[in-house]
Image (tube, rainbow, N blue to C red; front, side, top):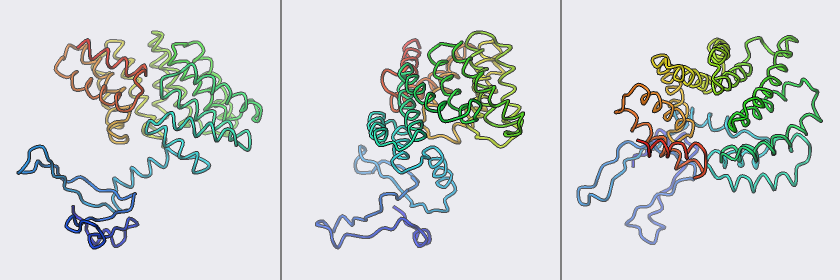
Length: 341
């Protein structure tokens, strides 16, 4: 273990040698604060025992650019009005769905106003979505929508996110007409906001709705409309500052559309663009990576390049087993694909 004094002198992660206070001083124990972060330099087998491995670590500090990027990303993903709300989001992110639901149930009992209730209903829906329990998720989203519609004007921009989320759940359930209905509601409000100059003409949120609509049209086999909506989304995302992961989703949706149209070369180009962003921005075991690995597997199968798929399906299954409930539709699909190979 390497501890660079120049890094620890400015660090907010202090440590202490406690060998003099330990019952076993020969162990030369070091006590670190809980949020200490180390970089793995090398892992090698020990010469004396092949079953033991030696891990070489070096401590990081606040100036580490990769650590800073990761920390900022985690903060973005677990925002909330209070520490308890942020804890709930973090539980969802790490897959502790039961604990997250218990926490949100308690928060719901003590909710002080309608806006807090809306937020909690939405998070409870997210827990169900992450489990693949889409029908139950719609109940929480509909409850959230009812409260939202009572406290907001009919064309309030806040409703667009809610309509979009409900549309995504109905799309996952295969209820495409309902999905399009909610996407249209979202798009209508956003277009009104643009016409009233409340939103710029090329706003990232418009791109999300266009891409979602495009994916539904792909699912029902209307590829021309699918491509048109995805290109609308991409025209916005590639010309304004937006979340790169949203752009990655559009690339992936375009890849799926071109794959189903048997334009495999174009499909691969978009998959690779989406994969590059997701691998740069997401943890190696993030479920969204499993989705694109599985999609690329289907592409290589279509082109009869059978040497490539095993790597992708193994990665998809491993991520799914670690991050998804055993009954989640995505994990079930990954396993079925693996068995076919």
